[in-house]
Length: 47
Image 1 (cartoon, rainbow, N blue to C red):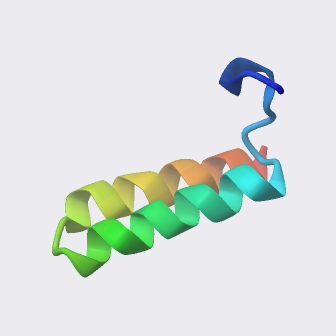
Image 2: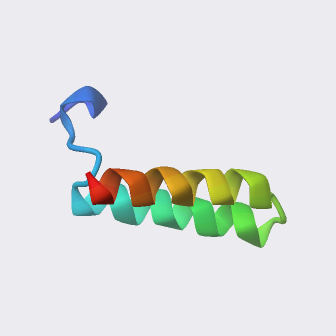
Image 3: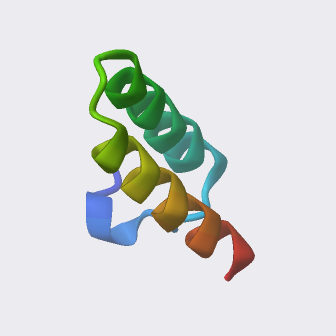
């Protein structure tokens, strides 16, 4: 099993997980955390 450090940040599974976590934060009203996670995800995808 790969460790977290070995997984590429723009791997589709990581992206889906991070997107889901951001949606969960938004759902409970934690928009700052949701926005931060989405910004990080967008940055990693662009790279």
